[in-house]
Length: 284
Length: 266
Image (cartoon, rainbow over all chains, first blue to last red; front, top):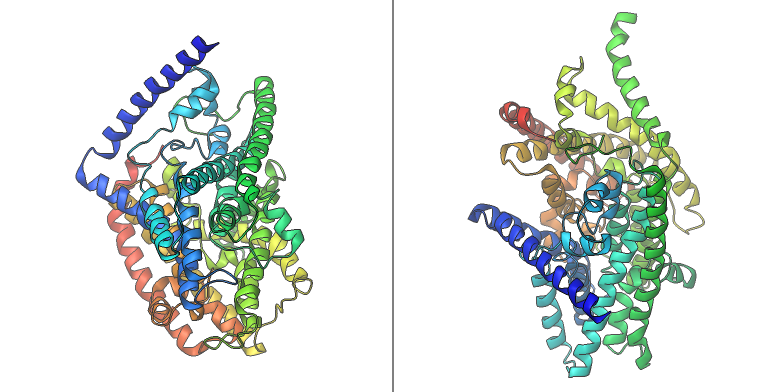
């Protein structure tokens, strides 16, 4: 058992080294490409939260959230999404594209299990890190402005919640994206739609919402767990300490649902295959 | 008469094919509309949280902001023009488009309008009918504002189409993947077009600068006219100006990039 685990870990590291090297070669092939892609990524990730930032500036906060608290929320939101980029590039995050285009066959012929292929194929340690920088800057800036007491326990809680939020984003994409097993054409871009909705709403404090809508945003469309809820816990807006564990628990539940959906989709795929596969990797 | 109508028939047929293409596979496209509905519900709630009790902010009441958001979502496809041009370049199918006996702009525009027809029936109309339940007035500030809005929407579409061809030409000229250009464009224009947040609610100075950018002519201008929070004549004139300027630029860029299109795509 331990031997098998060690072998799997070693294989993952080997593949990460391989895909990491390819990513560096691709992005750093010339200065123009590197600067264009990297700066653009920073601008795009900054733009995603600029509207909320400007609103917070204009109204000295949003609802019960002070300006610095909104800043923290934005930093957290950018970082949670950005954490996925170095590991889930090349449409691993947008899984419905791979399924809809018939590209799962490319993964199935790899000499490793699907989970390992998906865990490693999107590894991009250089090109995928652009979102981390603005997220970190915002988070550190806000932490300083809020005079938060940064203890090892708080940092551990922050990291645990960030990881949980990132997992929720990925699981949500897979949950919706699995529909592409059944409807490859019309659901090809469903992961993008789902992630775009999370992206557009993640940067807003959701306090003023009605209970029904809020319940939906913490279950069916878990945008509340991307930043708002964990930030409430980390900033002490939510008083009870167990709230720090709500997002990780939600991550476990949503991941389980996503795994079930994906496995169901794989069974369907085993029966029907893909009608959209073309040998050069594009769709019909 | 029949000879005169023949070219028009080509475009209407293209639009009809695009409109019916939605239901060709499965009803999953409805999930996209569901996500849009949730987005507008959240945005409406957020505006209520921020603006309740503040009275008029930079000439906008809470009611006007809610109408702005509702109409912005109902006409989202018209206020953020997207055609199949990007996909055609990406897939390489643009080559066959050149062979069709129709103008390039006309082909993509009629395809786009066909898709709009479906979206207007399946999402925009139900959303407008739901507006009373959401406690939002869907009506324009005045009948005149409603009339100017239609004209402004047409001009905004013209600016949006020109931008579509400019960005596509840039992707070709700069030899960058079309999805990369689209990724940047989508991120930047959401803020700069005023579709998400009315410029009046941004910090003073920033909103004023954004008003003069071409992206504002695609969404902010029609929505401000609809809600009666902008000078209609001035906004329309700015839209006309951008439309003329951008179409000249789009035409030139398309011409100089055209030769490079041959080797582009999958």
